[in-house]
Image (cartoon, rainbow, N blue to C red; front, side):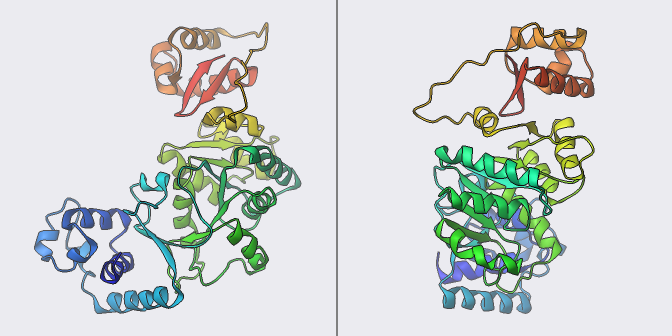
Length: 367
């Protein structure tokens, strides 16, 4: 990318009314980032969904000056970056319409052709969550996945430290510029993470770890991976936002269940209950549902529990899945003439009984 093109991309990032989706529309229409700033405004306004308010900052000198300042910082520090049309832009993230048009990176990051999962959860991780997280990563280690998280307190740093321990590449997705670390207490982990992966961010060197940045950052955590795992979460929290975004990208979401009434299991239990996440209790569940396999392993047949008692609704669903194979929840509800909400809870009960299993793509099949 030339200096002029990089400056044009930075200008697009800096204009408040032009987000990533609109920026991509403009680039596609004009053919390049630089061409946007030489085209006539009345031509740009013909683009679907783009009006005067969107373009009002396009030639604002203040936005240009701050973009020039960031460009100087990038050149002075020899900062690495990835443009959304570059070959090295993360494969999964490229398919997200609102993915950053440009992000910055530091470390030894190699994402192409790799298994990638994001691990998120509460900042107030319990001993139960710590044990789950460390065991999950230890058991996944033979498959050499990349572990992505937010380098925050709790589940994030637990996952990234465990990844380093087992020699896995790990990526910290930050909500501020690469010239700082938040929380500051995690500076002691920066070197290890950089050597075993690194850090990425869409935020400039002038960006602070403001609350809205963390929410914006969550879409990158969800989008860069093929699946998101929620270890522990309270009833509300950023990890649930990440799970929701992952679902909107049609990515698989997994959650570990906890005891009813446990504060930091409430979020995970709700995700499972509402069919917004597959329930997992081990790395083996995740490996199976994602279709991952060690080359040396042979797939072992799964045998359902004998003499399981099914009620009338469960029998109808089981019979349909046996006859027609893998099906989505809506199709099951339609064909079995059962309300969607009832199918959802029934499938969860059947999963617990070991007679059905969830599959990637939000499918279910009889065992």
